[in-house]
Length: 291
Image 1 (cartoon, one colour):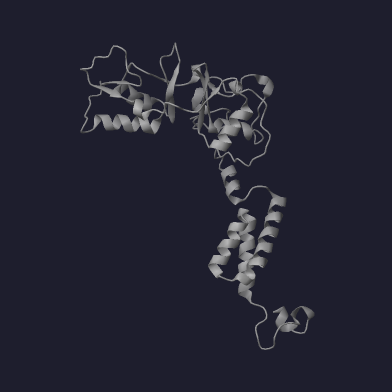
Image 2 (cartoon, rainbow, N blue to C red):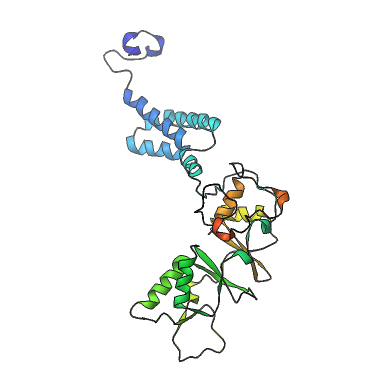
């Protein structure tokens, strides 16, 4: 409209007569790219996508300039893009490996779920029925496997999905094992070879990620961020000492959002809640699982 009303203005001096000087579609493409760049904070990928959609190599440079300016403006307002913001608002336990926020300098032994609060599975002494009852009783997503409660030597870790699938497969055809069939995670030394048993060792992760219980929270959080772990087991000379989940670490790193991490308190985990509640309590939320 401005060019049509003022065709002699110096900005439009190079326009040829009887030829459209201003193409609204060009401004629409550049504006859409800049809006998308400001919302998502993506840069190169948006420029490439816009070029592939339009095939207009002439407008790549204006699109690049608009996208970079929109990203700088967005970063000046807030560091999070729309996807990171939605993850944050919904309190999903997402640990960004680019996050440079300070990590509390506390030993991981003050954060982890200790052995006495964990629901563990012993290597022997189970049947298919007792393991199915265990799954119905405890909603956790996985269970450490130890030799026994007195000598908690870590043998591995089995997820809830793997254990449920193994038990369901065992009771269905063609195996059709009875519910009182013995199940084990370690071959008993004096087992009767003529008896039918269920070997769950193939379903167990026999080499889970473990750290020493004297490790720092900074090292543990870095492993969660870099490796994308969901849990880490802590041992002392092969004996299970505790477990830390991704949600526990997320609670600590987001302690500024209405949660407090008191380094002088000694034990940061809620008393009497065990692993069902994760690390720190959120008022009004009684359905959060630590695993």
